[in-house]
Image 1 (cartoon, rainbow, N blue to C red):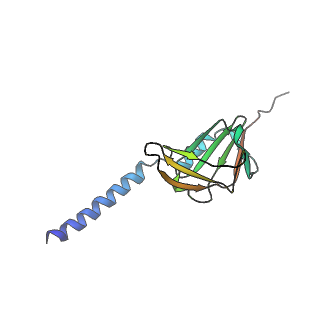
Image 2: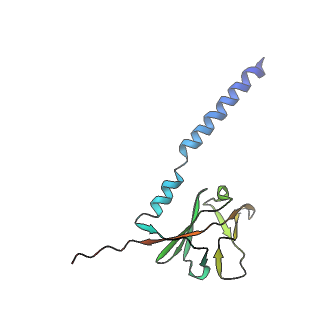
Image 3: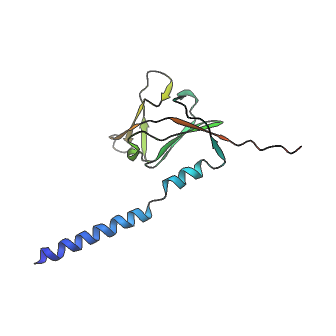
Length: 136
């Protein structure tokens, strides 16, 4: 008798918890749009030079942003995007100084040093700052 009352109660609590977590999760696409504000997309490329990467940033479950100075590249993984966690470190093992759309990135939990997932990279979309037209 008690079990019949507890099971629906537990199910209700789980549903409420999931709804609250969904409501608290920030919109990832909006976060990406804010990061690219004022930039214009170019034609996708297959590879970028690793020695030119100044920094990288993860947009949770969505994309990796690579800053190469005047050009910012966005990579939306072909698979494994759900492994993108801003608190994890990205580990790539490359035999050459280029990161390409056929490469994978291992996600590593920085506190435990355990692998948390694998991301299969997609194409790199370059974004550049819009040049203001001069008024003559």
